[in-house]
Image (cartoon, rainbow, N blue to C red):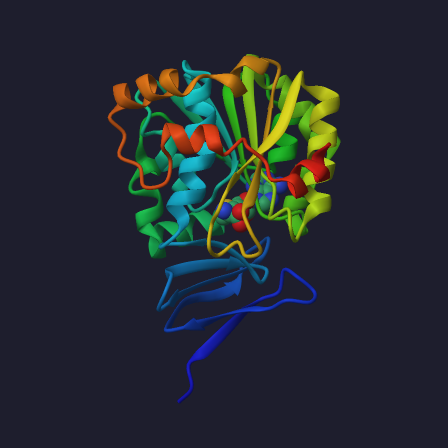
Length: 283
Ligand code: SAM
């Protein structure tokens, strides 16, 4: 019998097809259609509403770059907020920093957390049980509007701006997010692949530049987010954080003794060097 296939339906004119060696779950949660299956090249992987979210093979790139870049640039982050991130990979990377005393994670879909715990346990690696974790099931946009809590680093680990993730790309969300940051705090966002989704990045950076003293993006290449490097949005009222020297980053990184597979202080610095076509989108 021929192998089952799943197609990613993110782009109208381009289909990525994954061979499915085994399906673990394929059903609707209260918010979205969730599929977890095994692909021979990427291991276990999750799709939401036909869009690839995470795979065992390449998740480290995305999670390391969205967690360690803002935390190491900040240098003294104690309180971190994650919006989305239901698979637990971001929580795992954030909590590898012993200086982080508290991490609130706000996920809209309890189904993603439960099924990831069951079928993608290598993502969280127990992070949901860490005493520093405060897991909240709510819409991230409503949470940042209502909370009075403050955070040094905020990471938007969202789906694309389709379905429940759409509100996380709007100016009201970014304005409320800014209110949740301590002075000089940093906001980072997943912003899609600029070659394929230029409007997503253009709109986010334009909103962020209206709100913050410094806003830009940095890049990471994640094989299953096809079409070139992915853009990760960056916003803070402290412009120095984008210019922390490589030697200071090295000191902070060495002091932690973190073992990473993509992040290095040199990659951190280089990630902010933007190719011309990306600068054209945001400037
Ligand atoms: N790495 C992934 C990517 O870029 O495709 C993101 C992975 S993570 C699974 C995305 C999470 O965002 C999902 O679990 C989804 O339920 C959550 N999410 C979407 N909209 C949300 C919202 N409005 N508030 C909180 N979480 C949301």
